[in-house]
Length: 230
Image (cartoon, rainbow, N blue to C red):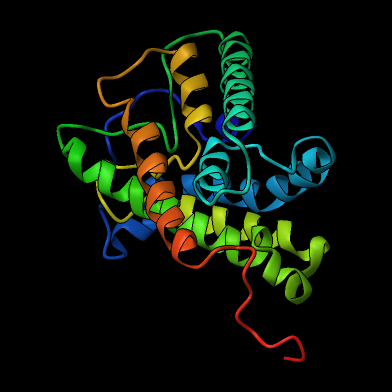
C-alpha cells in the first residue's frame, strides 16, 4: 500500500519554476502522501503483526534487532525470507492493478544522471540509521518500556518513518526519498525492472544495522545502568 500511494509513471525530475522553489513542485508534495500513509498505516500493521512476529514488517528492523542480539540468526533468516517473499507478491499485485511495468515508486528510484549512486547510498544509510535509533529508543529497547508503553510506541515509529521518508525526498534534485524498507523496493523491482543501483536498498539498512548494533554491543539491552528507584 505504501508503494501504491507513491506510484507514478516515469518522468523527468520537475525543476522549480517559481520563487517558492522546490516547495511549489510535485517533488515536494508527492512524497507527502507517502509520509502520511506511513504515519497512519505502519502503527496499525505493527499492532496487527506484533502477536505473531513482534511487528517485524521491515527487513531494516529485523536486521537491527539481530545485530542488537535480540533475535537469533534462524529467526532473522525466517523473517527476512517472509518479508522479501511478501514484497514480491505485493509487487505482482501492484503490476496487475496498474496494468503496466512502466512506473516508478517513491523511495525506490534514483535519477543517476543527477545523483551519483554513492550519494544515494549515504542518504539511505543515514535515513535507516535515524529510523533504527528512534525505533529502539521509543519501542524496541526494553529499558524504555515504562516511558512510552506498548500503545504509544508504534505511533512514534510510524511518525519517524513518515518524517524520514518525506524529509529525504525533496532536498536533493533527482532523489525522491529513502527506501528504509528493502523488501518494499524489491517488490517494486519485481513488478517493474531491477535498476543497477537496487543493491543500495539492502546495503544501506545492513550498514546502519551493524553500526547501531555496535552501540548496543557496548551498552547491552539487558543491562540497565539506571538505579532501580530512578
